[in-house]
Length: 496
Image (cartoon, rainbow, N blue to C red; front, side, top):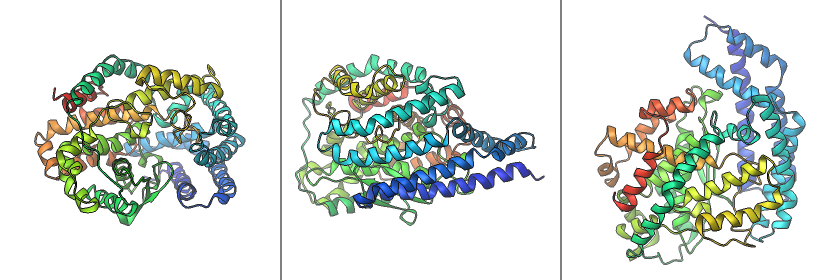
């Protein structure tokens, strides 16, 4: 039986996917290879692409096709596909073309300037570009809020976490805050008697790059379908058929770039293993940013900091960086599980990381809901850093509220995805251990295929076939359960 309306929709969304491909690669080039003077023209070109895609999604013919497809005798897959198409249509048709274009131009300008303003600690210059980004995000939030009947911040968060609401996040974070501070104190007291050697550099960039490539290969990255480059802020971009991973290097410390590579490789494996037969449709793409972050954190935190994995990795480090006591397995395990509050989110340890996310969530929600203005952010940041991590960030905008790329890019509502990802990742590994009790022995032996196979079966191959809650239940036989995250941390850091 043919389904002409659904077939027409599939053709339209395939075209959108191809336009998105061009946008993704142009955006990657903007962040990695493009000379500075090219930014204005690139920003205009990307805005033009966004407008073209928006026009396609808001064409009245698309609504007619969506309504007609709803009456066709679609199978379960096609119904799921139609659900995701309508979701994309709803979002686009809530926003005017002028706003889409203005946001693309404003965020290109703000992000490009941020690259030099952050190292210069130039809050005033940053605020001049960021103010319009915030104003436009508020407009978007209001329009989406009115269309969906949810709060402005929830409307933005829904772009990254379909169906999730800030009340859900608040409840999860409130629970974490009841036990995390005490756990951090207990671990730090224990680690005071277990010093870790600091690796002695310098570590030339080319050696770090070679090490990163070797680790990516062991983690199953397909270099025929992707590459590793350098950017101001590490990210995984491109498209499933051509995944672009980036990191950044400092010659006095290889540990950050290495874990950055492992983190982004987790994102990349998800993208590279999405079902190619339907990756051109919304249903064939990543389910949510929380699920995406669960893949990067499954690689970086659950696997990358596993003592067995680090022991397996030690010979590779010695091969590329030379032998020294700090690179022995026992010290690597101590080094990569060291708990110490720090200013920088991406360098945070596994225990203090949630505090960085809770802080950002609370600030950006207040900002989008109009409780504070952009100029108020530094003072609120300083207050919360002192309260949550006992750190002083006054006048240090570079390592404070200017440190992340998300806000200049207008990605408000994204930050909760990181801690959601940590919760999901812990739940994935709890499920793996139930199914494969010898999992930890396999990891220590460098046998990682069980991990990859489980993720492929339950997450990668499923794409957006299911709503997030259903995906989690099908994978683990329960809803999202933060108890697994707590159990993981207590076992790893206190052997509890």
